[in-house]
Amino acid sequence: MTEQYIQMIAALGGVILLIILFGYLMKKRQTKSGVLINVVSYQPFGPRKGVAALKMGREVLLLGITQNDIKLLKTFNENEFEEKTTAEINTKIRMLKNMKERLNES
Picture 1: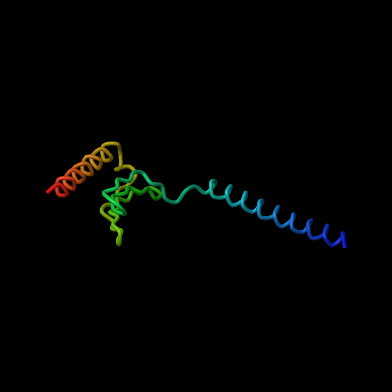
Picture 2 (picture 1 turned 90 degrees about the vertical axis):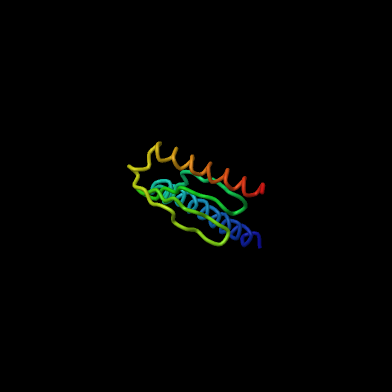
C-alpha cells in the first residue's frame, strides 16, 4: 500500500516539475522573440476612453479608444515618430483634455 502512495507522489512531483519546466521555457521563448506590441503612451479622457500610441514592429499606431470602439487615427513609421511628434501629440491631447473640461463645466 505504501508503495502505491510513493509511486503516486513521485508521479505528481514529476507532473509538477514538467509544468514548471514548460513555464520556464515559454517565458524564455517570449523574451527571446520580443514583444509584439509596445504601449508608447496612453492618455485617458474618462472611464474607458482615451488615446493610445502603440508600437508594432517599425510602425507606431495612434488609436482612439472608446467604451464600444477602437479606431485607428494615424499611422507613423518608426523614423517619423520622434520626440517632436510625441511632443505634438501630447500638446494636442492636452488641448482636447482642456476642451473636455470646459464642456463639462458648462
